[in-house]
Length: 406
Image (cartoon, rainbow, N blue to C red; front, side, top):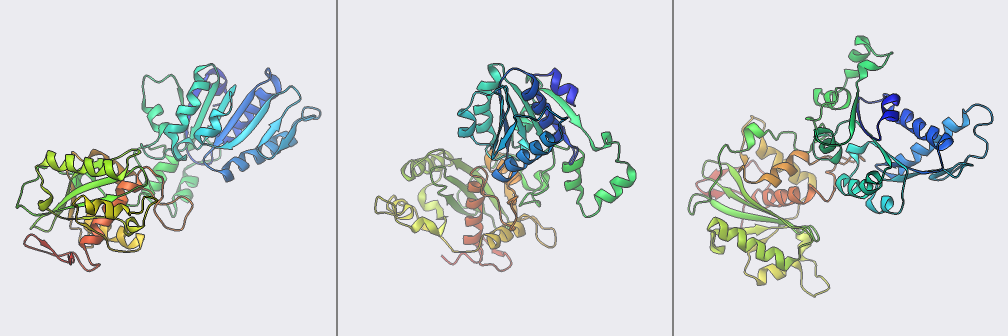
């Protein structure tokens, strides 16, 4: 791996857990700072705590250098300076942090686990394109991140190196048996088998494309069932879904809209456009669900909900705990008897992408992760189900949904 890092200007390393890759690549950059012409090297990590950990590793290596080599090296909080003018700066990975510097080399640790990785890569790329070196290291974390995109791109300029646990001289079948204990198959494959297809900490692990995605495009038809919308205002990035409850007891999400820096007014126009595309009139929609927080007044003196109501939308909301809503969605995806009552039309590409990558918060606390990417669509989904159901077992009678109450 070290030889590969020395031979390639751009390198991605996909690894099993605890293979000393971070230590090794940090050592490569320490060597460069000591022996190559003066330069700035950035160490990026997914958070403040992780960046401090990288500094601690540098301290250990500097302390253990042969006598005389460590003289004049100063390790401060977040920055290490060298007598030849070189610097190593450890930072939490953000777009703004990278744009402030012109590094000779970038080391991005746990790249697949860094929030908003596409934007950060956009900030890193100019330094890379101008001749700087880049090494990205990570255990796989599904397919919804820049690490996977670069790894899977056959035309990308980055060299690729796999570091599997079997390369470790102290790991054998006995180690494998011990390490597997207490881990699900998904978690094992993600963390040790370098499997990009697995996302072990998904909120909706019940979601199965074979079961929950319809085989053919779903066309809305008047009178077939009851039609609903659901909104997550999402600050400037709102999300809207359209769903139909059918007499057979199923609920189908059949259309979607995802905004970017969108106002409430532009969202209202977008909703009307999607309605028109489906042949929907406002009278066809039973109600539009949203977050109760949408009732809060803005600096314009009107709440987002009130502004939509003035545009003729029938808005409803029902307060509930986040985990209660998550549990209700799970019960529709697959109940205790294995019955599937929730499906998605194949044209809802973004909603399907979001439900597949909606994760639990890595910081713990058993709550979904507010990443400003997948959470808006999933909040809209939750508001829909919470407004449909009263917390009891879902039941349909004809085209009516039990628990609507409005």
